[in-house]
Length: 111
Length: 113
Image 1 (spheres, rainbow over the protein chains, first blue to last red):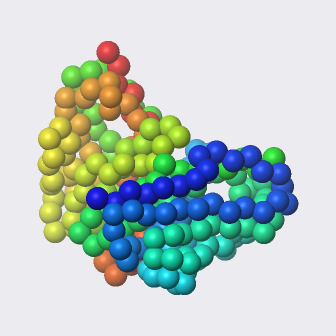
Image 2: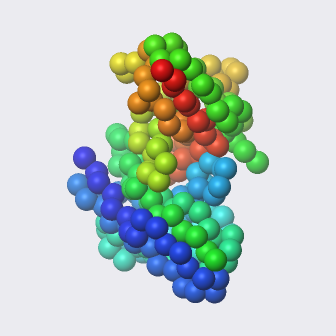
Image 3: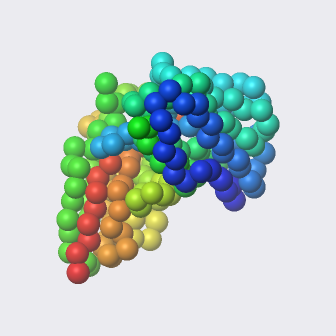
């Protein structure tokens, strides 16, 4: 079965600072990978998804970017954080025949 | 535009009784529906799913019902247990959509002793 590793678990960053969140996947190969964000009091919103190395699709215009340098590695980045980037960020992995599996998430607070 | 809606932000039931969580969707292209359970500071865990070719799927204490004409699905938990207390998210996807999930805003279930 798939296991998703995300780090860090919590992060407090000042406005204008850069961001790098990493997600790695174990137990599968060639997965679709996703970054979701849960803002306070809201559902999970899809930010990016990737069907392969170097292939990134953005779902909403925003201050963030994503990269997939390896098959099982997905990175979420920002050059300059905004207050509105605060939220709970979740990485997910999907293979056909299974439901999407989520990591444990990163709580980002921009101050 | 909220394509998946969970209109009840919270639900409280007594232990042993049935919990019914509801979800409505607007996009007729959705053909696969899932329920996830989430504890605070953790990622969602998959509970149960249903394809649009079915109207019911059961797994132990959990049953999901789908009414395509009404664009409505529900999750039944019976009997409810204190460990079921969590936020439940309904999600939907469309074939050919890269398994991108559209989530509802969640329902906080509290099972009381």
